[in-house]
Every structure is written in structure tokens, then in C-alpha cells.
Length: 70
Image (cartoon, rainbow, N blue to C red):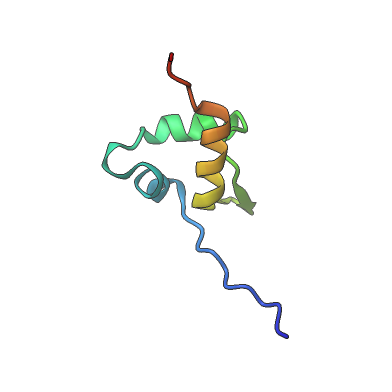
């Protein structure tokens, strides 16, 4: 049986906001700050920085989700 998995496309920071948040994306500055603080998981390949959208969504849910009062 072949264990090859279909690779998930990685996006750059310019496309990350739209991929995760749609039309109400935060600024590039905010995304860069979250990356520098280690909140957003990313891959660094030389000077290139790329993001897996699924991992970013999971990290945001873990680090930035604010529960409402009940």
C-alpha cells in the first residue's frame, strides 16, 4: 500500500489573512507580529515563510479564542 499523502498547499503571508479570515482579515503587520511571537505556526525555507492554513486555524483557536459569558 502506498503511504504517500497528498501535500497540503502552503500559503504566504499575503494570502494567509484571506485564507483564514476571508474578507475581514487582520493587517499584514498583525500577522507578522503573531508569527514573531510564535502564535502562528509556520515553515521557514531559507528566507521564505509559508503557512499551513489548517494549523494556523487550530493555533488561533487555542491561543486567541475568548469564551463568552454565560
